[in-house]
Length: 175
Image (tube, rainbow, N blue to C red; front, side, top):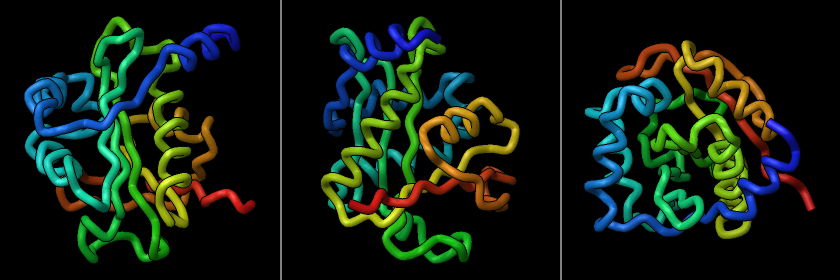
């Protein structure tokens, strides 16, 4: 993708707060095969999104491009998932993720731009010390997208529901 295309995508991309009214749309998206490849089975991810919607310890966002909802993203305090997390996660680490559901808008940099915007909002509005992502080891494209925006590989972690996952971390920038 050209630099001009990336700039254009960012100029028309908006993250708005997701609400309970968006649940039907998000649920349809979670059942799409391409979204399940990125995020995992809908049965597991639905509960994750429900937990993020309206929670004080989460940022849930609808990704809009050119005035149209095309995807979803959230950042949530990793402690919300319980104590069974990799030991390398420091207190204050938030899990972050996003997907572009609309097939006509995939592959043009919207997902990467949305992740950058969400990470910036996370660091600007919370005391998060780091952002982390868990992505299936089969999702090499996802890993590369996270690496392009500054996430670094830490380990392979076995998620009890989704199986082996890459764990990538982005440390909060120091002023």
